[in-house]
Length: 214
Length: 74
Image 1: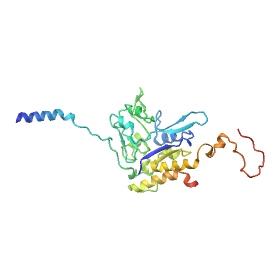
Image 2: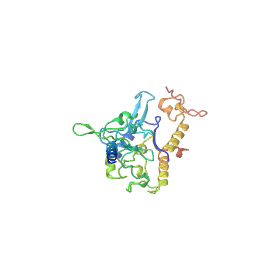
Image 3: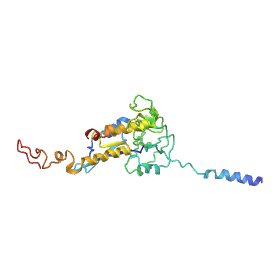
Image 4: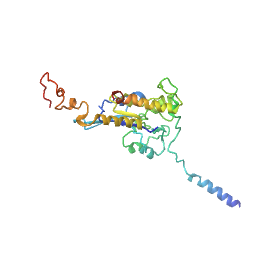
């Protein structure tokens, strides 16, 4: 089996935040901690792009390299996880991560930085699979239940793909080949207007005069 | 002879802190493999816990079934 990977299709993501909601609900993530979030570039400008971001479970993870207490480990499936019992909450991983994945809950009366929390690819942690202790610290272990991450399975437009890297890459490749680009994309004319949108197919009589589209 | 032995023992004691630490890139219990399952009622049907190939196949099937609509369209 290849490594488990996330891929987010920026052409499909509609910034609905269902991935964020699914993650928070599945793992009962506390306030102030977002294991996953949607980032939008050029927000409000035609052609804006959104992408869902979380831990990318890097093959050569910088968080793992800088952790002074070696709390990170990688599973056979390529999922980067960490041990909260070892974590000292120093924040080095937060500076090292290019995706801003590590999150730090505020704890206590003075908002002390707590132990690091991040996306687990719904794969739990070092505790026993499916145990209450695991759920308390890391959330649900869907991988051991034979399921895929909740964010990807809940994605309404299937923009967010998760699973075996080879399978996910195949799905994405098929998609890109079939959908084309620019005005070839299905629905482009409806969304942005075109000379052809709303016109009957060539060779067929026109029942009513077509309105000019901008 | 005794002085030499004492010197060696002292050196061993003093240099013990200079030994090589573990170079393993993980800490704590890495845990059982995922294909062992959780034993809960929330397990997905269609695979056999403890069977690695069965779990891997279920993962692939689930990815295709749930995330690839082109298999239904074309």
